[in-house]
Image 1 (cartoon, one colour):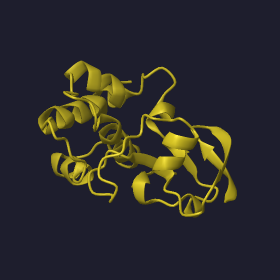
Image 2 (cartoon, rainbow, N blue to C red):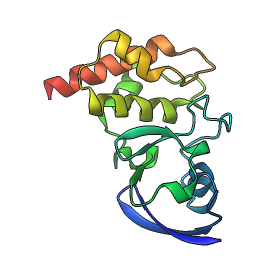
Image 3 (cartoon, helix red, strand yellow):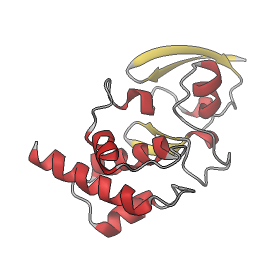
Image 4 (cartoon, rainbow, N blue to C red):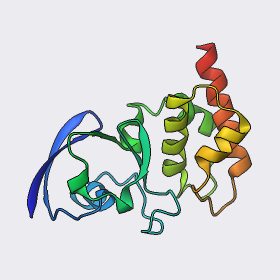
Length: 155
């Protein structure tokens, strides 16, 4: 076991875990940040997406030992009151059906908009590719991302 000091959602948190422990399990089991979901365990579905710095990454395959001093943002840390433009658009468009994949979808969408505040349809599809929604809400997801773009540009 090793001690790690991690910057998560603007706070420094300490954990004592094996170096190879995936960040997903550090977040869920050790820090009780359960908004990040387990989907496949092989980084293929996107349910476990968090931000490492400004990049959307799959936390199920990210060993805690590789995080270093980079900031991690989870769905819980995206906004204090759930009022990030993407979160607001998600609610307005009524994106979630079962909701299981939505935290990962939102984290991928916010990372996209951070690096590209006005993405084309093709750029949205490329960025969201690999975030699987078993309920098939892809049309609403794309519509919500476009709404968030519009709200951000009009703010």
